[in-house]
Length: 590
Image (cartoon, rainbow, N blue to C red):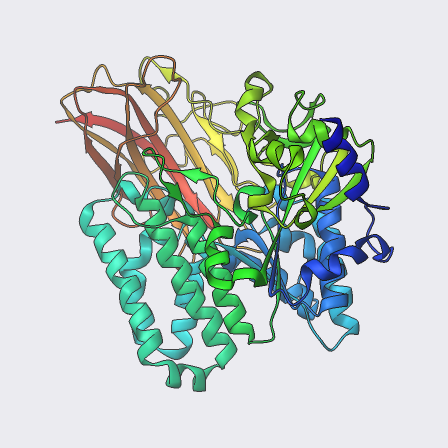
């Protein structure tokens, strides 16, 4: 191992600073690695390390100023990131709100905000502009709403016809439960998406004339992302051929095509996504493509992959049951890649993996696939071994970045994710009267939207149609249209098995447009396997369409409760901006 450490020490390119704006003298040896690449993918060993984020900022500066890169792409939702793009190009809006609106708390940090501000400053002083794009496709809501907005401009009647079948994908609550909707409802939505895709191809000339080529391209990619996201949701419980990683790679390729043959992109993602060889395998041990391997297929050596590793220190990640917090880890295990890199005693450095000896003890050790840390958005100190994987970095990356001791990324304090529902299984439903002494009715669990612009809940007595308690859920406005506020409770299914359960209530709402409305719902929770605290619902009853009427009306959600049901969830939800009122709740069976 001493020979390996000596080689690392001799080959290491020391990093002189993590701070942006200090030149690139330490990055000069990378010129030959980047060369004429069209894509430089920057990975990370955790989704919450300050030094990784700062070095990515510096590498973006280097690629933009020295190599003419014109795109920054991040592992975040494509349509939501367009708000950030508006800011970096035109100074439109508030950058902190735009960053929060990307939905990814992982990037909702001081370090990424500083990168966005640098992009804005660059664009304000240079003719060659740099654009900010997301290439992920996990959320359909903003994509669906943006498509309806575009269609309203170019084909109003088609927009109106599309709004009906697309409704399950135009608000977060419905979209999250799309896989549980009736087959006919799912099928109508997918057929509508297919018709929209055909219309983009058929009517391109007319729609470009009515808007512009750029607007058509951006809207068409929203249609692609909507299709990808809808199929990804069906993969939760139905056969689906969608791969998130392949979709992300193809979205990157689409963005490069949109920006033209001279466009070049710096990408920001986890090591798993950035690596040019996959680390994903199916149950039968067959390799599953990751984003980097698909990009390597499409772009070959024009795709450069940069991996990140560390020995010890802190990072932020979600702790199950505790929410987002900072974690600290001790030095990596003896013999691991991270620990051997640390033995060079260089605080931070780059390693050009092309300089690795082709044979001998160093090559043999790397070929043995030593362990290295791989931590995403979730971490538990009780399962440290889960976050180690065997890897030969030469097969994954062109360059490896190493940091001996890390600190946690600095989250924007006003936008930390809220804790999830408690999911306590009560013996029976309680407090359908919605009474309480605070804002949340007793016995009910509340979850507002993440981020600063959250939904609020309030109780009022004598306001329901029968003169009883009512509860309101409201969000006056937000820079984005996605988000939901929910009240729910979970109780034993013992008294309801083999019955048809009907959950009804009085509902009214003051909302406007697609993507908004009030819902009542009921879900079935199966019995969890031994040692598993909670199972996801496997069936749902819901009002056919969100309520948007400002007048009280009575609505119901119904479902058959199977013999093997463990729990039942009942809930009230407002999606989007506006206010909804609920009251006079009842549970009945037939």
